[in-house]
Structure formats: C-alpha cells, structure tokens
Image (cartoon, rainbow, N blue to C red; front, side, top):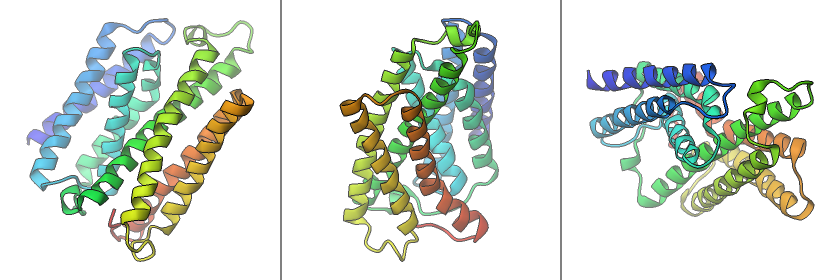
Length: 268
C-alpha cells in the first residue's frame, strides 16, 4: 500500500537523521547529509499525510493522527528555522518522537470527524491550535537544550557538545522569538474558539479551554517579564516548560482520556 511505503520511508529517514546528529553532536556544524535526510523524512511524511487526506476526504483528528500531524509540522518548522538559526540539534529528540507518532498513526488508524466536515471558522480554530502547539513544542525543546547547556557550562571543563552550541544569549533570544510567534497563534486559536464553539460543556472542552488560557497567561507573563524585567535563565526555562505541559494536557489529555480510555470521540 502506498501510504505504508511513504510512512516506512519517512520513519527510516527520521531515524537515520537522528543517528547523524548523535554521531556529529560534538561538531559546530552538522553535515549536509543530515539536512537532506531530514527533509526527505518530512517530505515523505507530508506525502503520507496528503494521501491519507485524499482517501478520507479530510484530516482525521484521532489521538495518534493528530500527534503525527503535529510532530510533522514541528519537524518542518525546525528545518525551516535551521536554515538560518542553529537549532538542528533539537532533532536529536524531535525526530525519534515524530517517527514514533507516525508509526502509531499507521497502526492505530481511527475514523473521527475530519477537517472537511467543519466550517471555515472551526477549521481556523483547529489549524491555528495545531500551529501554536507546534511552535511552542519547539520552544519547550529549546528550553530543555538551554537548561542542559546552562548546567554543563558550570562543569570544568565543559563537554564538547555544549561548546559546539551557540552562546547562551543567542539561545535565549531564539527561545523568546519562538515563544512570541507561538503566542500569536495561540491567541488566534483561543479567540476563534470563544467566537465559534457554541457549547463548551457539551463538547467536553471546558478543561481544554481552561488549561489553554492558563498556558496563554504564563507565556504572556513570561514575555512581559522578559521585556520589563529582563527575565532569563532558569526563570524562562521553568515557565516555558510549565506552560507547555499545560498545553500538552489541554491538547492531548482530553483526547487520551475520552478516546483511548473512555472510548469516546472528541468533536475536535
């Protein structure tokens, strides 16, 4: 089956990319072959997603399908960012997760409401939610890498992997740039949700909305604190990770409970 072929290729390329990152992790510059493999992985993943979209006449938003779609978008955004920013080493954690989510999506395919079954307003809400989560996912990975870098720089002497990373100031500036962009899409997602979702209680979306609002408050407060008080370092890392965990629970917690545990389906 053609979908299985594209998925298998994509998973293989993701894992090969991870191996290359590990092998060259102590170098300042990654080999060009890494980018070719990573782009091949994302393009194969995109082909798989496109074929499934055509077969189902829309996107499926089941638990594993959504995870696969978001992981693909995060990987794509990472590669785009890596063209002019030193973020490619985040792939050491991201690419295996993306391969895993794609594998689960193939083996646990499920029929849920597709994007084509929603009106334009709901489609806007869903797509901006996915983009926001994807960007803030990258921010969380960046925060973890920044925490490791900050800790290892205190060791004597620091390890070569840490020395190969950009300066802390550059890493922090990149983190806040990603956070600001992700917050814009999260704001659009929340506003569109309030405007166009008719009954939050009937659609089991109250906890999702509350957690998303709490995450929005945390990210907004962090950006404001950065602007006014110069927040950085551990403060930025901790609050970025707390905000992302809230979003993770909002986006996937409800799906996990309702679809996989209670065997119900979320409307979105």
